Structure formats: structure tokens, C-alpha cells
Length: 259
Image 1 (cartoon, rainbow, N blue to C red):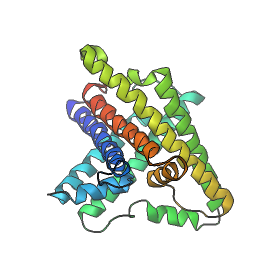
Image 2: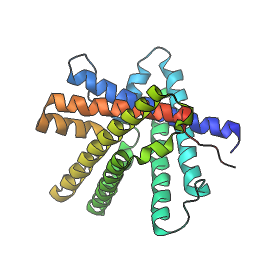
Image 3: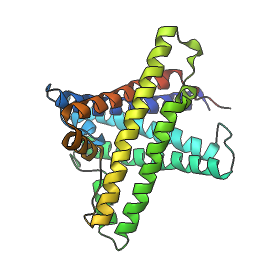
């Protein structure tokens, strides 16, 4: 991969980190009484849009997200780590592709906002509305729930196997920086696993209750608040903020370069 492509991929990874930093930060602020709001990806984009030079920032965010799409699809098709073509490798590469699709939709949503054609609730909503109004709505919901459940399990695996450490080249970091990477990664992947797991539960519940609708991180935070209290919601939100920190560190130190 050329330096330009590698830098584009790093920009993408960092942008994902910034989005998660905002999601966690805004939700934690709401939980602990410092303003903010329960946030998902769309809310993070809305927050960016409200800042000075919001349109420019949204365009930069969209470009960054496209960079992340590029990296995920590069992983899916070029297989830089030589995962191979066995069942486990195919599942992993399909997950990379699916991640690229999701962040591609988010990039499109950011561009729509920058052009004044979108706002809160735009982006993937129209796609999900079409899916959940189709004859196969329940099947789609169950499939999405299974995918989310699998993702949640994988996030916990990443956190407690220490697998996430492989994603960052720690050789150039001092001891203190390595501690930040390890702690932010473990906390971040755990929090992400909890949120995605709740989203899976809510999707299954929606499927079997017949009340089919899109499930977002905001819904997961609302569930945490209603069932476990505001403080627990705030702690999990801080975990997502930590995940954002990890991704930003990963963007700088991760070994993305390939031949």
C-alpha cells in the first residue's frame, strides 16, 4: 500500500475514533449532568454540524469515514494479513466488508448533512424503514440480531483475550503510553460489547413482538438508563469514549502498511 493510501486508511481509523469519542462523551455528559445527550452515530454527526465551520467539518468527517471504508474493504478483498479462505477467514473478511458498508452509509449521512439535505434521523433510517416494511421484515430483524450478537461476543473476546493488542504496534511506545493503550482498549471493547449486545437483545425483542424498527446505540443507552440507572449508563458511555481513544492511538501506531 502506498504512503498516500496508508495515510488515508489511518485518517479513516482516527475518524472512527473521533465519532466514538463524541458518542461516549456526549452520553457521559448527559448521564452526569453536564449537558450533552444520549448519542449514537447520527447524534455525533449532528454535534459536528453545530460547531463553527460545521459543514467543512462534516465533509472532513465524511472523507475520513470513506477512508475507513477503504481500509475495511482492503482487508476484506486484499487480505493483507493472509487470513486465507477457510470458514473462519471468510467470516472475518465478510465482517470487514459489512463494517465498510455501515461506515459508508454513515459517510453518506455526513455528506447529506453537509449539503443541508439531512439531519437528525437521516442516513440509514430510510433503508431500515424499507427493510422493516417489507414482507421479510421479521427475517431481516432476526438476521440483524444474530449478527449483532456475534459482534458483541467478538468484542468481549477482543477485550479479554488481549487480541486487541495485536492491532497496535506497541514497540515504539513508552511504558506509560502502552498502559493507556491496554486500558483504553480493554475498557473500550468491553463497553462496545455491552452496547452491541443490548442492541442485539432489542432487535430480537422487536422481531418477536412485531414492533419492528431500527435499533441504535441511543436505544441501547436508554435501555441501560431505564434498567440499571443513569450512573451505569454514564460508565458504559465513558467506556465508548475510551474505545475512541484507543482507535485514535491505533490510527497512529497500528501496522497498516502492506506490500
